[in-house]
Length: 343
Image (cartoon, rainbow, N blue to C red; front, side, top):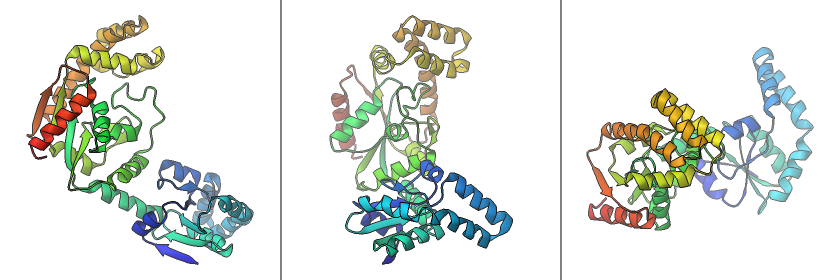
């Protein structure tokens, strides 16, 4: 049996079952449904050849060429699926819910599986993702200068049962020129949005959601404009820590990184630091004076943060001064303030 499912039904009913994304590995790597398994009907090169045949020779020739490729792999597809199937159900999609998913569904149904095909394919999923992100949240933005421990506070809030969007965690980047150090490669903006939507779908939208203050990009990943505008107009809670505490945190976070990586990150902001300060920062890193290097770069980042704060559209900006790096203490103080302000 082959059944067509809407995106909502597909996501709900596929939990705990095999989800097959039959697009090429390149399409899959760029962005995919979470927990999906890639089983390309055509690999990158085959897809390219078929596309060229379609343009130059027409639809029928492209279909015949596709059959030549698929015919040799049909038994491989079934053998791939066999050990992964739960309760005889398989969930399949391609880009638009067309010939690729239809062909795989036919094959697996022929073998006796109950196949569920996503109507509209991955394209429908992307529409769902953007709808999730475009929702209006009761956001509270956690602000503060570099080294204020915003991400750690955010994660502590999550431990405490608060609803949290960790943009930097999803993007594999800490948001500054040093943000990629020690982290895995970033996802595409598209897959970042997929990950974000999966977080959002579990929220109770009647409750507040905490998010860290960010620029429009986190590394090379772009924040959706709807969410960005929501962030710009939401209340901001600024964590204000003394410079010395911030320096200690930065040394703790980045001091173990390879010298070459730190030098490259500092060179990325050379134009903003100026030649003299850039050289001083590089010299400090080479001397393993990480606090000295951090102090030089903070001069730039602090100015940039103050400028960005002045451009926010919200008037609800609240500053909380702390003399401690105790993350739990800071998180509990922010929650108490949010409840007092009925946010």
